[in-house]
Image 1 (tube, helix red, strand yellow):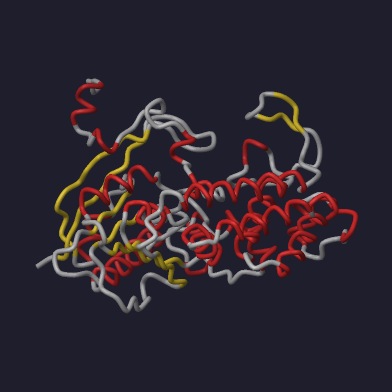
Image 2 (image 1 turned 120 degrees about the vertical axis):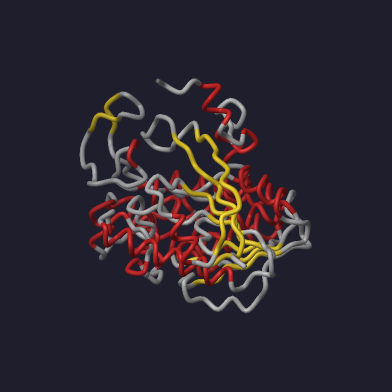
Length: 375
């Protein structure tokens, strides 16, 4: 017999579950949370509620799988200090840009100056890209504009901000189908049927419009976050493997969402950034990468890796501190992971995720696992 909606919702933590009408997309991606697209992040409102439930103002929260920095950004808005560990160099760059303090006036002057120079990029500094990836995924004109913008970056003080702008524009300027920007399989070199727009579309030929738009949008988002963040609080990101990082501090709890096994290749989704910015690529050390699949051996490697990362984080916590893990554990991996990490499950809060990104649809659920160090 099918479960009724009332029976379904009786099992949910309704404070952690939102409808699309109650929490529209523009609120889920407020201020710097939308500074750059990132597939696989959790929403800031969920982080906000969990921080309010389990942490005191001024506490120091740790996220050993920092991702795009949602926990760190929301901690600053909620009046907490935060530290994140992250393996991917691009993610570390993005988090630093999101959480840094700025002289907003000086930043605005630089970004508006860079924006004013975009129109001259193609004609003044055009050159053919050498890298095979750039030749494959960009029109010659778009690649030349991106490379010319990259050449401008060292002239400015806020270089990391402009690197994020460049990466965001590079994502949009690829010869990718509009409906498949998360993980495009092949470049589009001619007209194609677009599932997003329900008409024939052509691949992008220029990056200049994206560079202008995202430069100004980045400034607006940083300004908006500067108006709501707690200036007395700090956030730090540590670039390294969460299994072995030495944190050198004591934290008041963990709030994290580890990667799901076999779902996303976190380095590959930002390949354009690694190619353009020359970032350190450590994809071989990713946990749960899509490329690894979900074989028995891959799932065992995932269990061992996540358990090691959580155990390492737990060793840096004050006694009795909460460990909050947001996960869709449909393979029932986390009871063993928590046991290996020396953690005891205290509660499992279920939430309904009514909308997925991209072309996915249908019912989707997550759990918030509340654990503490076993005694």
